[in-house]
Image (cartoon, rainbow, N blue to C red; front, side):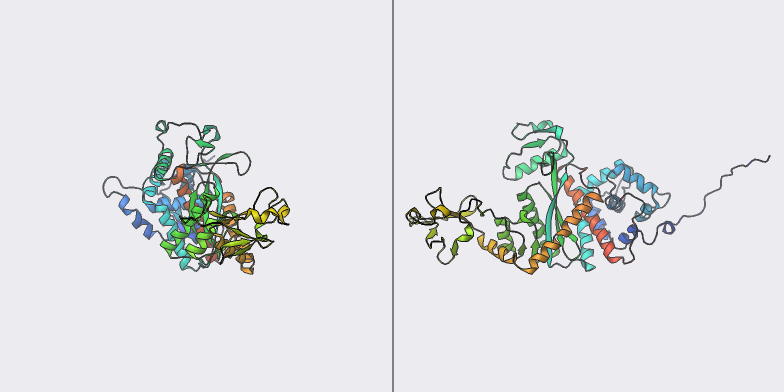
Length: 456
C-alpha cells in the first residue's frame, strides 16, 4: 500500500491582511477617523535617538484602543490577542510575521513615557477635535455626572483614618502621589479608613459593603452624547462638583467650548455651585436646587416668608420684619457664616405675642432664616426648573447614565487595574477615548458594523 509523505513547501506568498478584515468591522470604522500624527509629535521628545530602537508609540496606542474598545483588561492577554487576531494586527499596522511587543515592554512604555508626557490627554483631545470637525458636538448644552469605580485596593489592607501611619515604610508610586497631594493642599478631613496600597482612594459604602473607590466624572455634549472631558476625583459630592468646575474651565480654555446650559442631578445643586455657574460662568443651571429648608413639623417654611431685596429683609406671614441686624455697629459686619449664609431673625418683641407663633417658632423665642449668599443664583435656577426646556434637559441627562452603563458592562471598567490618581487618570481617559471613537464610528458609518470576535 502506497503511503503518503508530507513534503514541506516553501512559503513565498505575501499575505494581505486587507482580505481578512470585513469592510463593516468596527476597527475599520474607527481607523477612518483616527489620526495619530499630532500624538507622535507630542511624544517625540520622550524617545532617544540612540541605543536600541524603542517600540513605536503609535503601536502602543492602537493596542490600548483595542483593549478598551473590546473590554480586554489584562495587558498580557491584550498582547496575546493582538498576536492571534488578524483584524487587530491590521489595525495595529502589523504584518502576519511582525512581532508583537512583550507585555512587560508594553507596560513599561505605557506607564513611563506616556504618563510623563500626558499623552493620553492629548490623545483624548485629538479624538474630540475630530468629533467637533465631524459635527458631532453642538456646544449648546452639556451634561455632567459621576460614577463610582472600585479601586485596586483590598478592604483587608484598610486602617482607620485616625491611626498614625509611618508612610516612610511604603515607597510605592500611589503613596508618593498621595503625600505630594497632601503637601500641596489644605489639610483634608480624616477619612474613616485609608488603604495602605492606594491611600488616595475613597472609602465608600454607596451600595452594599464598603470598598475603596475613585469617581470618574464625565462632561458630555447632549447633541450626540460625545464626552468633551473626563476627570478623576474622590467619591464625594464636593469633589465631584469641583471636578465639574475643572472640566468646564479646561474645555473653555483648550477647546473654546462653553455651553449655554449645564444639566446635572441634585448633587450639583449646592448653592456655591449654582452661584459659580450663574455669576462667574453665565451658564444656565438645569439642575435641581439642593434645598433643605422644607419643614416636616407643620411650621412655616422659608417659602412662606416674603423676601424684600430693597430693604434687605424678610417679612413673616404677620407682616413683621426679619433682619440680619437690629442695631447699628461701629465696625460694619458682613454677617456671613462659615456655611456661607446670612442669618435673618425676627424681633423677640414682635414674636412674643404673635398669633402665628405656634406655627412659626413654637420652641424658640424668635424665628431665624439662613439665607445663602448665592440665593440669587438659586432663585434663577428655580425659575429655570419651571420651564419646558428644563423638562427636556431631564430627559437628555440620561445620555450620561447610558455612557456609564456602557463603561462598566461593555468596556468592563467596573474596577481599576492601575493605582493612584495618575492610574485612575490614565484609565478614565483611555476609556472615554474608546467610547468617543465607538460613538463616532456609529454615527458616521451608516451601514453599521460588527464587533469582531473579541469579548464585548
